[in-house]
Length: 236
Ligand code: CTP
Ligand code: MG
Image (cartoon, rainbow, N blue to C red; front, side, top):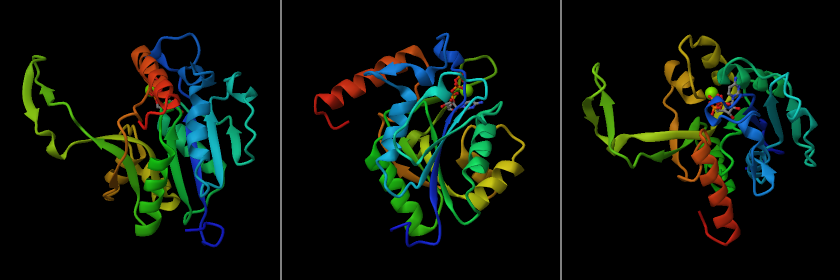
């Protein structure tokens, strides 16, 4: 669908206002280098491959001196110094900054997922725009999942056949998402949880296991390995 002709707009909000505590570096992890570019730049480049994204808002912390100096040549990119105390606050502020209307669509993405594939982003957008339903990229869980009991031992095994690990991007219509984010009192770690709490059943669009969130030092090493493998021609 050509959004130029459509009656709605599609924008992306990339949240990069965290401090990366679990990474343990003395600078926010989104500025760690992978093959010569920051993690944030890789995340943004992958989304910019999608022509239907009209605007891309990068949310950084107001106190972030590195982010405000980054230069992006693509005119769709706006750097918004509106990061909040939680990821959900950063998302909310980014959506407000974008100026999108209730009938528009927003694609929310973690700067900490630099290995996202443009083809998976396109698949998610295709699905949401075609069905008029919100959805997220996710992958079926491949490990056997254990829930611990009060003693810290295995309380039970959760059958994994219907379990998925949620990723970003997540794609929702702005009106319902904004309402859901302002209605939820519980701590939500993704937009889909807020939509679920409002009674929606977002779609699961199968993505790629390489779109993991870079959280700890080992994840950064793996992300670097993914980019090296891609440079060597591997389709991962
Ligand atoms: N994020 C944000 N604003 C916050 C917290 C997180 O924009 N107040 C962003 C992060 O920059 C990241 C994404 O949300 O791109 C996912 O969060 P997470 O992986 O938890 O990153 P951090 O919060 O930076 O890391 P940590 O929890 O280890 O401190
Ligand atoms: Mg965090």
